[in-house]
Structures are given as C-alpha cells and as structure tokens.
Length: 183
Image (cartoon, rainbow, N blue to C red; front, side, top):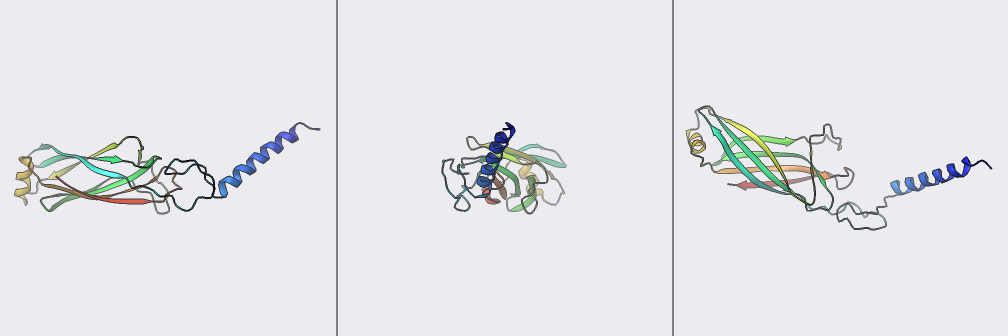
C-alpha cells in the first residue's frame, strides 16, 4: 500500500473538520466573556460599551494670533477581548461657543472594510490615553474668548462620539458611544 494515501486521508479529514466548525456557527470561546462553551452561538454576544473620559484639556501656548490646545481622552475596555477603536470625533465649546470639530483615527468604510490601519487597539487590562492637539485662531471678533484663553480660565465643554468594534472584526458588529464633558 502506498504510504501517501493514509497521510492524505488524515489531512483531508482534518481539513473537513475545520471547515465544518468554521461554517457551522459553533463557537468554543465566547468573544466577550472569555468563557469556554460549546454549541451554536446564540446571535450577537452581549458587548459592554467602551468607557471614555476626558483625561485633560490644556492650553499649551497663547500668542497674539493663535492659542494651542492639547486634549486627551482615557479609553477603558470592560470586555474580555481587545477592541478596535476606529475613530473619536469630538466638538469643543468654550462658554457655549463652538470652537471646532476634530477627529482622531479613521472610520471603516461602509460594510466594515478598513481602508487604513489608523485605529487603536484597546486592551481589556488597562486604559489607553489618546491625545490630540488643535489651534484656535484669533479673529478679533471674540475678545471674551481670547481673554479666557490668555488668562487660562476657559469653561470647556467637549461632546462627541467614538466608533469601535471587537478585535475579531466579525463578532459584535460596529458600535458607537456618545460622550459629553465639562471642565
């Protein structure tokens, strides 16, 4: 008997078992809880939303024409698995006046296709600090704003949303969380 026939049979059998498990909807490890289980996955697993806090917003420099501001967010993941944070889009207000809108990262294209790798992996065991900076131009039309910036006494309000999904990209779907902070 040719020794290649039993080897090819074993390889074919393993490939068949892998295909059956892959396409049957059976999951051995729950994507969110980390518990071992057997059986059909009962739909989309329960996913805890990310926790986003305003870590800091600091005026780093003010001159006659520009004010330079650094902002940072603390992102915590309560899920067992890591999470891909695609984008944080935020609006900054000072004493009710909108300063501007910015975003950190890139959101996946419709259908979940990631066009670029500009995303953040948020691990479950420690928070991640994500920072950005922006410049406020002095137009001369808002002396109250400029006075607050020069004296480091602004009344900040930051609103926005974050877009994220589980690290497997196939489980949990696309998720969104909104936030609002005042300082």
